Image (cartoon, rainbow, N blue to C red; front, side, top):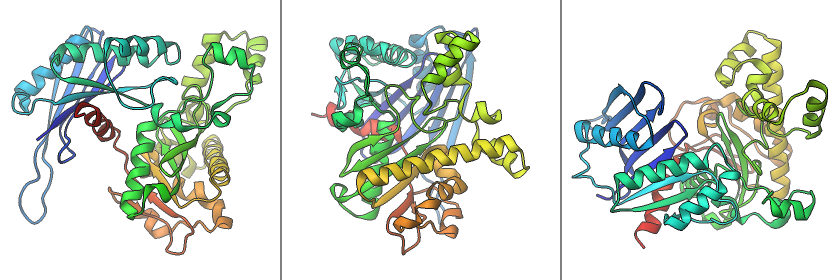
Length: 408
């Protein structure tokens, strides 16, 4: 057994999974949240092996604690206590390495990287590009290194998969010297998910990754789409920040920048006001009052005009990117849907591809509507491209990339 601990740290919480990389199975997972508040909360779930019998099942035991958690270091102590009291024992399942999700690697990091003091300095310096994420990621790294001082710690960057973008793809048409001095370019995000899904799709179909042109829709509260050619990201919807691109739960996606000038001049909105507007009060929340697409769909069924408009705006943007990436790739072999909406909203999947019949792409209604948890085909047998639902597993991808560095 070769356990790898995967850590995804936020400003006031962190998630973790202990994964046996030999079998690629989860041994335990947890969430430590409300860090810095008067009362924090820690949830720890132990995943038992499948039971014997004709219909084996996974037995999960979840344990919850509420107690003060003043900082990330205290949070890791709570996590260690949970492993000690609830299992699995870290003495018997000691991690061989710890993998950390880091949102922004800028143009410096294009592969999983062993964390050294210099790497920590670089992650800190890149906080200017991701002020909400990198400082929190770094806090998790510092706390995890204190908790596990004798194993390798590896940073896996959301932006790394998109470092294969060509200059003409990642360059914005603004003053070149200004852009260079402030490192303004398109970086792309959700890279671990897009990498995992595109590789899983190729393996499922039994086809060489290098032979496939793929479009991957990662549709959750945050959403992005990536064109993958031969396993390489060649175009992606998110840009300098995760704000660009598709309509999301609370984010606007693409918008004319002049709208911001107009609001600043006519309504007196400050830079912080505009940031809050586009990142936290726009998207589906701004259009229809909820960031949850399930709520929007229920309101659509009731005939709510704002919900209908919001849903149509959402689908319109999906179709626009599907068509654009079809053209950029010069055709497509595989289209995959993943993440919360992508995996669980058949109506969205069908609507996103509804207008691609001209390219021979056809979604099978019954296959698309059929429930399922694993990878599955939802296109017709005659479809020019195979359309898949591929459950993403970013933690497993981080563990894979971590061990590729830690075992060298």
